[in-house]
Each structure stands twice: as structure tokens, then as C-alpha cells.
Length: 68
Image (tube, rainbow, N blue to C red):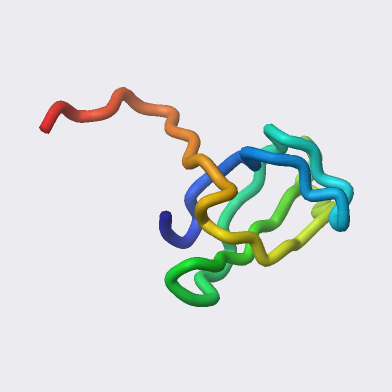
């Protein structure tokens, strides 16, 4: 995953009041295993900015994947 990827949580994050499936954007790469994700409402107002392990996220895609 990389900067500005749209991601969703694969599990609840109770400490940040985030539920499984909430959608956010990667806004910083902290290290190889940890990224900073901003969660915002449909109006663009951020309600959480959390450092999360990459393995707890799934990248969301809006285009068809290319065959390899």
C-alpha cells in the first residue's frame, strides 16, 4: 500500500471508534508495517486519523485489475 491509497479496515479499532469496513485514505507511510490513515465523512471532515498496521487494511480499487 502507498500514499493516498483508499483503504478499509479489516477489523474493529475500538480505541479510535472505528468499525470493520470503515473507509479511509493513507496520508503517511510511517514504516514498512505502519501507515497513517485519515477517516473522513462524506463532507470531507476528518473524524479520525490513526496509525494502523498494513495487515489490518484492504486496498479498495475503483478500476478493473490488469491481468498479469
